[in-house]
Every structure is written in structure tokens, then in C-alpha cells.
Length: 64
Image (cartoon, rainbow, N blue to C red; front, side, top):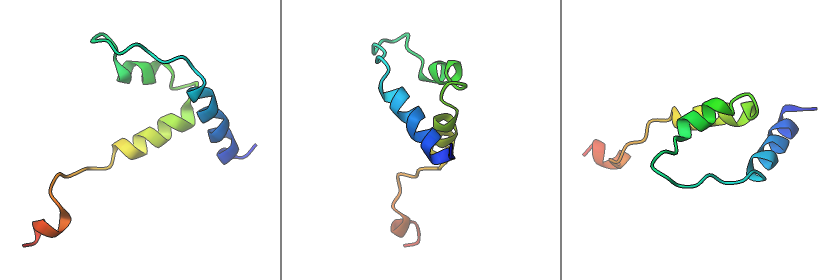
């Protein structure tokens, strides 16, 4: 299989799972750590997205 198809199958499997209850005890980072081997392509994509620095200052206003 190619990587794109693998990622799509993995994404379908992820969305097909039961959702977690939104409680104070829920830890999203722990959940991803525990499921990293099951969703390796999604974990790689998440790391890419979360590594992007986001600024609340508009780019144009920085140079005024």
C-alpha cells in the first residue's frame, strides 16, 4: 500500500472510534502517547502541525 492510502485508512479508523468524555482527568497528550503505535501517520501529522509557531500579532502590524 502507499502512504497516502495507509494514512486514509488510519484516519477512518480514528474517526470510527468512540469519543472520550470531556472531564478534568482527560489528558489528550497521554491519549496520543498511548495510541501512537496505532495511529503513527496521524501522530506524525500532529507533530508537524503543533510545531508551527502561531502568533497573535498580524504579520503586517509587526513592521509598522
